[in-house]
Image (cartoon, rainbow, N blue to C red; front, side, top):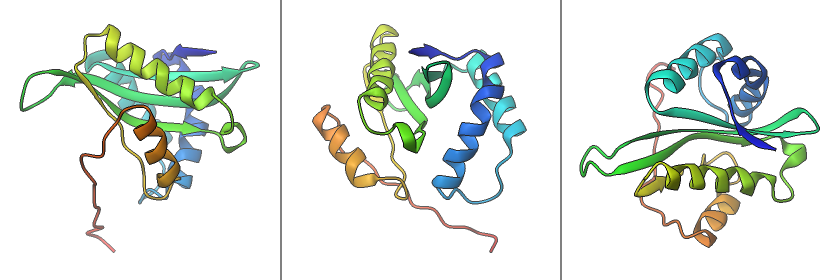
Length: 149
């Protein structure tokens, strides 16, 4: 089942968020309390949402994003901020159902386009092929430099 999270759900999402953080090799140290507080505010005030994928009552994946206006054109856009599926559940259609639910939410909200990202450390080839099959085009790459070594 895929459903929208409430702020109360974020406690249950936090352990999977930690897995995402670690697998993606994000810099710094995971701060689950900060993540929960930030996304509670984003969900409440800034057009943010988190979709949850549950199987047999267990959370196995999530996708978080925001609805906003493009800063250049003013058009309505949906932007993915994170998308993670527990490795044991990556085969099959569940992850694609999360993406489809995100796309449907963006359409229902009147968005003109969707922006998806992928981390270089997490199956970039497979995600790029998936995005292209679904009609996405590559428009930008992001580079990171750690300033405090």
